[in-house]
Image (cartoon, rainbow, N blue to C red):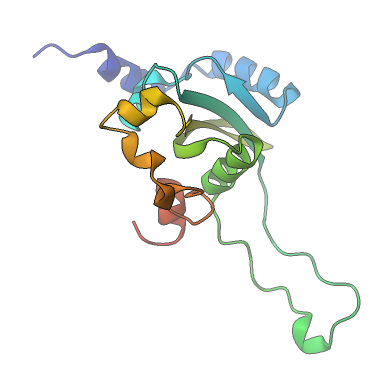
Length: 170
């Protein structure tokens, strides 16, 4: 059976070209932390997660700093019982990236996201955003569910795929 283009793209991303990806990440590090893109870098992954090349869909690259998420120790104004800092942030990097994209583009809803790379300092994600006010989105029977009021600000309520995984629901 003949395999399609998306199959070969998926296979190519399993072992990406290190030199090309490294050069890209060097330029990504110098750019802003949230950057709007014309088209997704991994078209196969974006399409699998619901992206369509039409008006109302936007792809954003988000850079998230790697490292611990330990809370800082308060330096004054607490009794000793409240001074301990044993709790860490329980959100994964992907969920943090989705929230940052949603804060930057307030009128858009986060559909999904995927990792495009990591280096010594940062994780890089592409986040798929949808404009629920566009008539193209309202008419599309596949994605029109996102226009309903109960699906507003879903990334902050932990309803995206990455958030559900971080919350232990997957």
